[in-house]
Length: 494
Image (tube, rainbow, N blue to C red; front, side, top):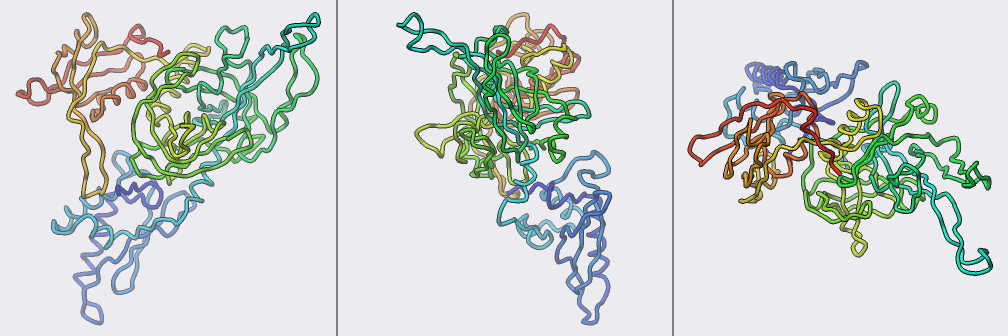
């Protein structure tokens, strides 16, 4: 198990060196029994008023020492470290290469696994909302139109689902949901897109639902009353092929309804077997929580979101999902978002699907950036590089030190489009093996073919990109020339 030190521990390497130095100092002194004292455990025991985590070191002679850590910082690059990082630093400090990772954890880190996830769920619920998308539609009555046949009746309907608060600032709050929650094939709106005409969210804890007032607007459509705990939103963009949409609400109005709401924390990724906690609005009966595990890290399923059947990359989970869960978050045991629920197998309740966090986050931030740049609802855009790849040598790689594993594959260029970025600046050729994608000098290793597409959701005009690759297996890893993306390089993701 790769223990991420993001909740229980945020120990930094420089402080580990201090602890080890203390340990060695104690070992060089004599106690009453003339036995060397050594570190028994390192455990988080509190938190300061300034938000720093306090840790206590317990020694074999019963004495203790404490130190504090500024969460998420190591004094150099601000990155959290894992238990594996501490293990490597320990070996470096002590020269002890014989100790195994498991022995290190047992001997030095007082790691406890909670018996339930109630604390994480309590935090998760702050970012959970119910989403209602209202639209005008036409129904048909079998009587009353000239005494026979059917007659059209204009009315109001709504679709419902879950949502996750993904970003908050002083002015606006942004909510991720599914595209199919805000879209209806029955809508006869004048926007030409079948997107709802109005949107409302209810923070977790609200019990209100829309009520038909029995009155009509000037066009003869029923007026719905959403109640005092609903917050009206606007649609700022979405993508049917990614099944992601983003709504925007007034932060002031939302906090007036519930001042405990908070934006979600994104996970860096996920692995098969880890906890999957799903929060949604099943059957429109209110928010509920189900729990399972990640069953498959990545597979493709066919969905018809807007009348067109498309292939969607998905994460499979066995947490129970029901109609109305769509758009709700899927979280790990640390309360971090790992996906957005969007589909289920009606014949097997243990086979359900979510949009992976890399796609959901990339698409949401892409939509928000597009809206802020254009001032109107947009879709998702991604640059076209002009390279087609194939995969081979797919295998599962296990790391015994961290007790974790992942699937890797060889990603090979199979075709390069003439006059494209790949053919021009990158000068890639069929047969080149792609090993990394570089964005603004930050290198991202390519272990799976879909990772490039996910990363392309995060780039913007003006960003500098390049590939690392191997050619013919003879010259080692090479780096293409760097290309600066232009606005004209981007196209809409349907």
